[in-house]
Image 1 (tube, rainbow, N blue to C red):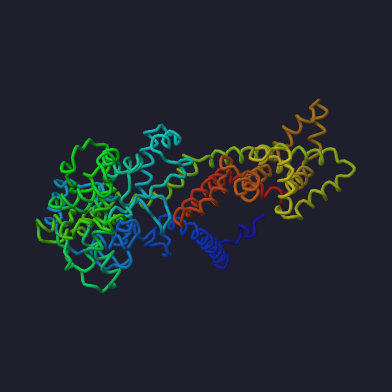
Image 2: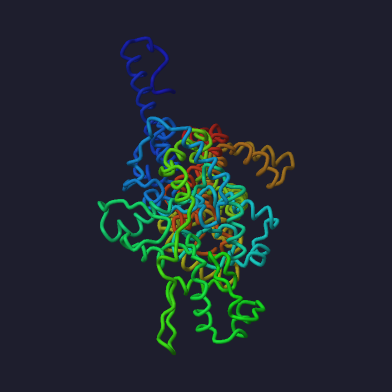
Length: 595
């Protein structure tokens, strides 16, 4: 009988009571949705909105925040890189504001200039590669990985051999491109670097790449570092000049040598330097792989790209090299050096600073929908790839949960049926023993179980996951109580008709026990799906990790955005199971109480 009888429901007091109950239930449902919505919103966060508290991602309708997230990704979450590109003094990406107007003519001319300029690899950079704050797997890293997966037919070992890399699997794939504005970014490129440069040039989205601004970088890297943020910005001349403070430091020790040109007028000094360094032509030819017949045949490479095997000598000539025998220092004079970069060429042509900030905003306005979609799905795509595409977490969990449910629906009902049907002499002692298993927390039994499974050589197997939970004390106790309430006459009639125990168990007991079996199955599924500590303890091999173990391991390498996306995806299976089995679950709750 219901708590509120059907008679008298039109009474104002009863209606008010019903309305109050309805409102309380609605408020309760809404309050339960708040954590899920916060998790859903948190799954789209990056560094600029990482600490926001909102149920809906604000960048979906806030264009300025979306622009801040875009610029943050483009400059790899580095305010220093932003200042070095825009020539501004932003301390954080949250300070960025949309420009009221974009000079489309100036930006168009700048883009046309980039098209006709032969950009060298070190002058170009790719954004959405490095996320030190949000700690996700950026867009271009994922796309580059997909390109390599397709190229090498999904074999990470084949890629390692071809590109001289050492990735354990695709989930450990990383891209850390060097900062090619500075001296540390100059290195001998590997096949992997060439593959990355080709991707950045040909396959990366146009809104995710950019070019370096050398003059702004000089101010950020040298002037502001040595003189403070309030230091006056200096316009770099093409030719090296001692009048510009710290200019020589920048050219000889800081900037990437690919931006530096040497004057061919210092040919003779270059020859003297090589003669002092190699003593004879045979040694020089052996290193350079050339067949030079006389010292006067040697020409100075204007740029390091032209030096070939003598690039180390070119760099030593730039920085300065001391001959220990004579004590003489060989170094190209400052007036023999000049810088060449795309932004300096633009200033020479137009007399203005390159409109990089406006160009970035125009790219944002042009690809706004694509950028918004990228931020909405990037963390989910990362989790999907780690757990399902390139990991075994989903497959292991499905097999484990299916096995746990199947075993729970076989072992526990059989044990409960035997206790209920045959009523052994010590049945109450058995029930007490079953209840005692609930008195100890699972952590107490984990070490003995681990030792036993180790001795049986079952670690890192499905048997190790399934065998310890085959019989569940509380489930047997609950099922026995339910079986005891079933009419005994049914069994007597079936027995007179010649039915065996297994037939009566299957046709009578299981048929009348569907609600309680649904509860047992759901309990087994939830225990298997949410189990973490035991699964981690007995299955330390990554190939046998369940989803819960994977979620724990993700925290070591990824940030809150990826973790929230993982939690959302991990909640989907339990939600689906509850929705599909809700009728049987409710009957399992109501029927035993009525019995």
